Image 1: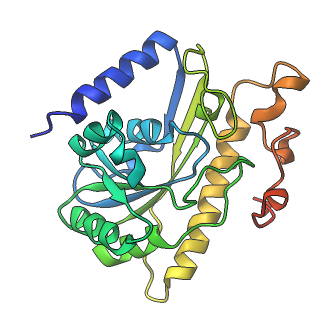
Image 2: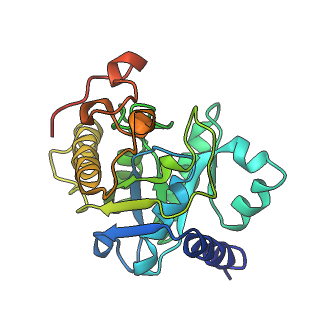
Image 3: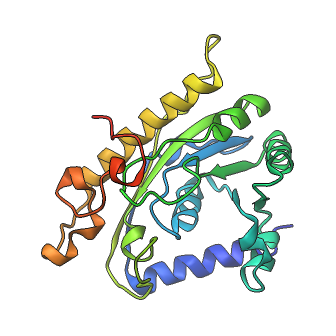
Length: 243
């Protein structure tokens, strides 16, 4: 019985309507209506898991996200996270989280992963951890790339949260599952995932219906699009590859 998750989804949708967020979901048909799958997304804001979960709603799926253990330790968010059966990740004991996620996948759940492991301050796709590819292979389930663009304007790393801002567009793009070929390795699949995420994010950024209102509002655009976000190499990430 899902006691906690559906009311939380309903509350989130109500808030989206109140704020009149302009949410666009493309490619939701790539998420299977049954069976396990790894949903791997880029990471630009503290709200990404809400919107990534929304992307699975057309398939009537509830996504179990892997999240930092500290979120589960919080007195408010902890009971909610446990009630929604999300998966805590203790970086000092990562194998336990991996096995819990693998079990969930084999039981037919959709597991959400942010393979960059932290928010990208450059608003490009950072170097990826290999966990998403390893999970999909271990559980023999599809690995589905997803890009989200727009929630960072509400709340992201290093910026004051503005959760009551209205009319913000959000684009969620879901791509084709990455095939597990006979000659695939964890490394090659992770490389392909990075390429797929970069393409999806580029498409979302190019399709975004708003531009900065002035010079002081260019912080939310990546440098390669004329924004003032730091370039990847300035914050220790590999240089962005051209799409």
